[in-house]
Image (cartoon, rainbow, N blue to C red):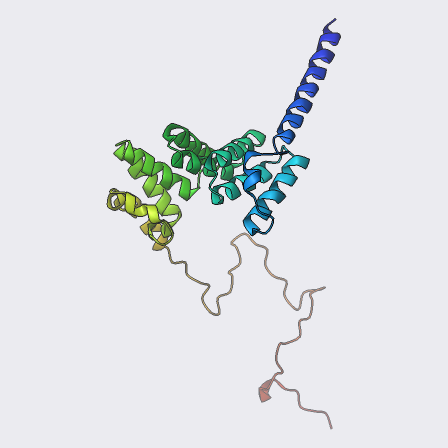
Length: 242
């Protein structure tokens, strides 16, 4: 009886997976935005290619993420959000989709959802400087100053370029950058001040105190090493025999 129940559960699970795959694949038969695609538009061609990829493999996190980014460019943010959600559902460890999902949710006004997605990004990629900074902005907007400063300082320590408005325009939205830099200074200064010395010219390793002594050239079985340069000292040369 127990074996029968296990077999029934396995069949049900497989059927559910098949149904889910079929349902997800059918979502790309005629998506809403398809009627706005033009065969002559390069962006639309990429979207169409991603749709065909997902028809063949609806469980691809990469394809969902790619389509989501393309739909953002096409200005279909809700459809893009759904693709990023499908990407993280297909692979919860795929942190780029979590980050993209957070950006789209924030743009769509879902701040709680965006905050959660940024935190998932950092959970799976702790050193993601962009996610740390974006989450810092959200904490600053919530008036959580200490949390924001800590997140900013980590982000700037990892990626100093985030301070450049040309790289990160949203740096201008923060009023806590100076405090974050003060917080980050001890760590970043210590890293920048580390100057490692090269090996001095002519340095030769000294043998360890307990290392065996090198064999004497006169010792039996010792290898005879040819000099690296010819001997030119007359006192060291033999007088030729008559």
